[in-house]
Length: 331
Length: 259
Image (cartoon, rainbow over all chains, first blue to last red; front, side, top):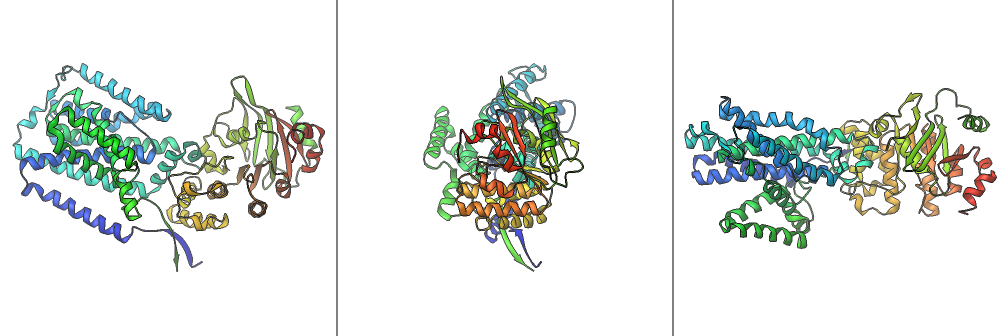
């Protein structure tokens, strides 16, 4: 047999996009050499947003797991770092280890929530986040609402601290984008989409639905935790109300829905838009939140598939699509 | 139980029915509240045998498929596959072992292309690696007449093509037992002929087929044995023509739903 069918490789335009992405990443790594402290700080926040959007999209857009409680892992990541640092661990090591500890915590929790139906799962995740926050607030170190600062971070030279945290954030973004790309192109990608579309039918074509959902859930938990530790490191003060705030979920929802749910690049575009809106209108206080709401409504009404939907409408194809195309090859 | 044995003994069984059945259910009970969707159902299909199931709506035919495929647990009874007890295995495990099913109302993965629908089945249920799965999925698309739609969204497929996707997805898991749930419904006469050819090919390849169908003439062209269900029980089973002549079957099935 000299003709056979294969899955098409990455297209030429997508390769160019990936190369451009690589150049942007290199530029971001070099930025602290010439960027001001303010720019570095702002971009660190943008990186946190991108990670969160990518993780939420992995959950909701590819596995159909709509969560409004990912702040459980953002807050928990921050809390673990605080605890580790207080026990004498060097802060940057603690930031790395925080994500791993959240993995250990999320694993048993996955048994509780993943058997639930979609709507129950969404609510259960919120309840879980609130429960974990309440427990954390009992810790004398946190002192309820008061919170606590990562004092040992203050001891480090501010420029070194800022640059290190920023570089960690860029690495985390690169890793989450590369990892989720590999994941979605691979077996887990197809299986999770099958679960999203019809869980029962997925199990009857042999997909171990719980195993697949657990993988996605754990990856997303760790991703959110890492974003949380980076955010804490740049904000320095850990306050349970903000670290475990429902705001995080609202931001993630906004970024992914406006960017394009279930597309690879959509969440990144959504994070960029969200960041830009925050930069321009952030000073208006509560009005800024209302403005975010208006933008979300406008998208829901006029571009329900988000920015990515608009791009597909214009060009006819999705850049960096995770579609597996069947092609015939000779020889 | 003894009733069933008598019925089974009276049934015209094919010559190759020695050894454990490909799939066998014994005393299956499935309750929904006070309603017994399956009321002590026992049935078997031997290797390479094609068994048809008929019965009025609500007879428990699709529920039987759900029980065999592991879509939901049964309240009582046991299921064996080539002699091995699988009563408590998950749907995914049963699929990997070689039991595939289709759905009466097609349930394609609508966010994926037709090829991706079949590919995920070839990888997950069929246990094939990426390169092998792609080629095998293409082969299945060819056999089911879906090749020209391979890279189009499954959401855009019409009813006939959705039924084809159901069969293709099941075939892609490389099953030894395939449960077909009314795949002939809504098809034109020409399409039915194509379908019968396809099922005959599966049968010739040694696959065990259990087929629920209202379109009797299509069913009778393929099956070796016929089971008639009514109100969660097996009313009659055996040689297809004998079963159709059975007065109880005519009353329960044909009387209420003439062809």
